[in-house]
Length: 274
Figure 1 (cartoon, rainbow, N blue to C red):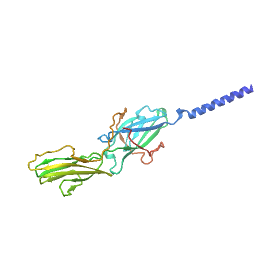
Figure 2 (figure 1 turned 180 degrees about the vertical axis):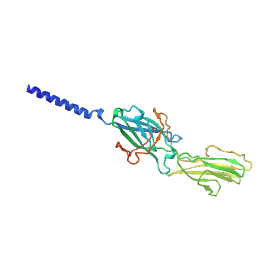
Figure 3 (figure 1 turned 90 degrees about the vertical axis):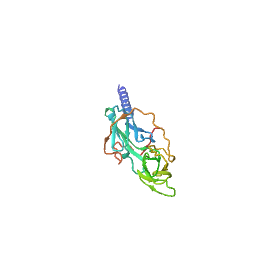
Figure 4 (figure 1 turned 135 degrees about the vertical axis):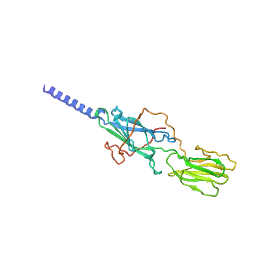
């Protein structure tokens, strides 16, 4: 009888131990892990600052949009598992040597009151290829021909010079718009130069001045000669289901070590598009 009691106690002890181990190492008790990816709009279009952020959560679920909170790193936030955010040109660095990088953070609150988790990345935005572009108010006409030159180059850049096309002369300006009057007949190769950091690009157009010339204006950006930096980047053709949200202004977090969930924020994340 005493032996049977001892055996029963041993079995109960083993069962309790197994239960405790199961509770400790059960997947249900593992901490939830948040992560995200992003797809950038075509870098060589006006969509390059439009970004789709796609969140994910392992070890738990988060059913409502309000449980997914994004800090886009530009002073605004949004909610939803997958969201679209468009960065303003005013939010990107003005120093042309600096890359466009935003500290983006995702905070997720799991269903059932689970422990919140977060993930932060430095999100790198690819810039448009540097290509010098400028428009002329006229490309042909009789003297005196007044021509206004306008910078139409896309993306961040600095205007290096605009050469008016006089042979043997370095007559230039370093800011646009600019207006010049051609007093004499001739064909003038006008050259426009821009730069972005160590990148440089130029474009050349002709201004024809003749007494019998018919006045021709121009509104397009076509060039007769170009020397530019070009990077081919595939367009984004497939988008996941996303939430278009209105953003609200906040005090940016995650840029000065403010990360209560303890997530590392040193990794640079690049677009998954292409």
